[in-house]
Image (tube, rainbow, N blue to C red; front, top):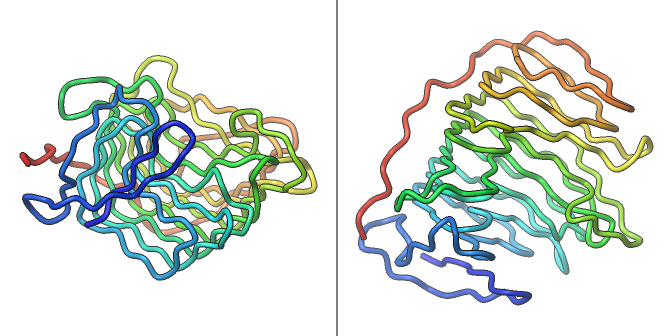
Length: 254
């Protein structure tokens, strides 16, 4: 198994031998800054499944910086104290055809540390390093004690530059969020009216529904998240299904 760790401004990849399948050989706490779990960059036909991931930054961050990433399923994983199952922030070469399915995330790590920036579903980029992110699905996602349930951010870290982060063909189908802390908030923000976020929201049952939204075209069915804001359109639809029933597994002993 390969685990990627980000420290300061560089990326390093190390191979860890797990004591059981899917468990990395180290457990950075939620308080460890700039540590990532698994970061496929310029990757194609990669599968990430049945893993337990704990760290102080992104649990997974799929990147398309110098080279595009595509055809990546991420399923049956469990995350502890992380900043989410993410795409970005480097997307200038593009990210496409990604499926996140049956993943659980909790805002507290296995040591009892609460993340100050925990997130669930997350796509992030900016004009500094942005590009097209399309055909991405998040299916049956379970969140517990997460500060930012859904984040689609085209102005990540206030980055500026000549690039165009544009998120289209995004589907979020089935999210249950419980025990969200006070102040929990989602964000659905497209770059500008010419490059709106295009997202479908279906079967969302969140216990914190405060949302910031702008420049977004949203199709919605069976959701208690109701974004509004400048440049936001919401089209009601019908879709069979329901929000998932959730159980959260303990991080395994290594």
